[in-house]
Length: 153
Image 1 (spheres, rainbow, N blue to C red):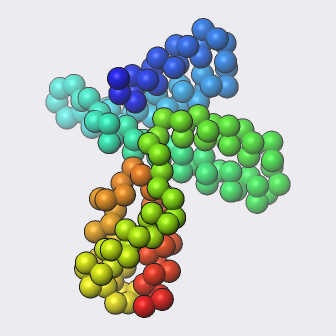
Image 2 (image 1 turned 180 degrees about the vertical axis):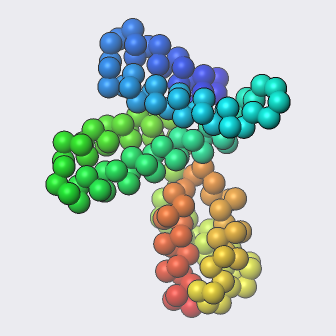
């Protein structure tokens, strides 16, 4: 069973359990998936791949993280807590994310493989690393680690 099927199954369960908070989050994810499906449709019916589903979920998670940061910055802990709860639900559908050490070792590998020697090689390194960590690491974290490593050279 794919992630999308799990989402639909969990949505039904949450509706039966009258878990309104979870239903709200799952419906928003379903809407985002349907929107992506429609945008991908060219002529016939478009079925999203697992990678596309993960991309939609990662985008939703990133939006929640950004909102949490903004709400905490402005002292709106009530809204930040709501976003944190939503983020937990979204992350339960995402594959296990890589930690900083795992990302750093891949970054080091790529830097030596492409022969990067300065921050000007950022694009080269990012272009090579993103396909390897897609769906498993937050892009902004990868970007930060690559910058740190390249400025240290």
